[in-house]
Amino acid sequence: MTGHTRSAKHMSLSEAVSRYVDDGSSVALEGFTHLIPFAAGHEIIRQKKRRLTLIRMTPDLIYDQMIGMGCASKLIFSWGGNPGVGSLHRFRDAVENAWPQALELDEHSHAAMAAAYQAGAAHLPFAMLRGYLGSDLAKVNPQIRWIRCPYTNERLATVPALRPDVTVIHAQQADFAGNVFLSGIVGVQREAALAAKLVIVTVEEVVEKLQVPMNSNILPHWVIAAVCHVPNGAAPSYAHGYSERDNRFCKRWDGIARERASFQDWMNIMVMDSHDFSEYEKKMAAETK
Image (cartoon, rainbow, N blue to C red):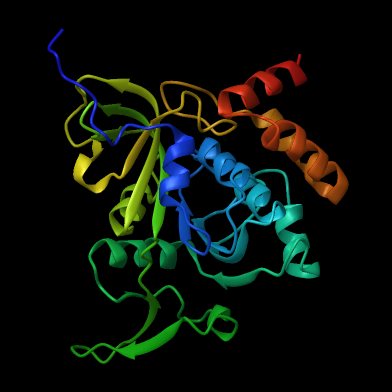
């Protein structure tokens, strides 16, 4: 034993959400197929956070749940759906019928979202890209604007930088000081974290010292507000080296979320009536036996 102690950044997920996620905040829960922070999304739902601006490249099941449970008033996103299955029914109901409340949309391409996070991480006011040339998306999104390059006179699209109040990610490991290691399919988690005012990270494992390969994705402790030990906190998505993706649940979700009553019943039993994510997982295990 070396006598090293964990920093004050280490706390329960309940405490982190209560301390750092305020009603009306802009919140990005990022993860691309892999390392999606479901446990953190459930805790935000459980604490009944309201009027959130949710930000995410490819919102999927966790945002369907958060939207359907009334957490969100606005969504900044690029493509939303249940991967390989179909629509997000609670997302769709909010847009088409304002249930449980109206949802404002700010839709972008994947390239624009990535560029906007990069601009936010660099503390720049906007991002530039060619990706919208020839696209009709600018007709429905007034945030997409145009400039002329001062060097070539080329016409380029711009989008505002993304600077979430809080970014939430899931990762494989954190050390006692609060440094975070993530690997595998990494989407825009690093950029979203560096762009944010505050960062909450749930992790599979807490170790005294990180042992990571060269050029790995490391977030240093000084950009992290809270580290929460939540094993399997990405389920039903997966964490490379720790868990596998639960494709069966993604298929089941289509039926659960299709009707308001079945959605509310499932969420109340499985999420709202669970003390934390580990209790939710026990219910899930019993349900699938």
